[in-house]
Length: 125
Image 1: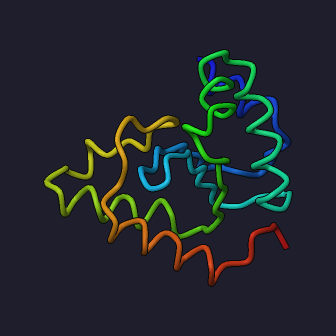
Image 2: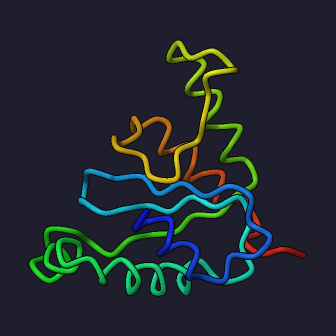
């Protein structure tokens, strides 16, 4: 509920896909969006401020246990993640994209996501 409220407080109109995932090296969170009305850096700053309302998140950021969160934007993210999940044994009917993932993605999937974001226009035309 806390993450949902933090994301709802942002101006993400027109965004259909949102998923916040943990990343191990360095430890931080990554927000994946299919499109964005704002620059990724702006969203990252706003979401970090919203998440800092949690004492645990705020303390981890102050101690340097969590690096600043990042935001990547690409309309290809749902497809990339669905393909990863089917290759991992999930059936199409079982695939749900969580708002908050509890485990990191494999490095090869992270590379695909980063590449997709690099070749994507981050804003709505």
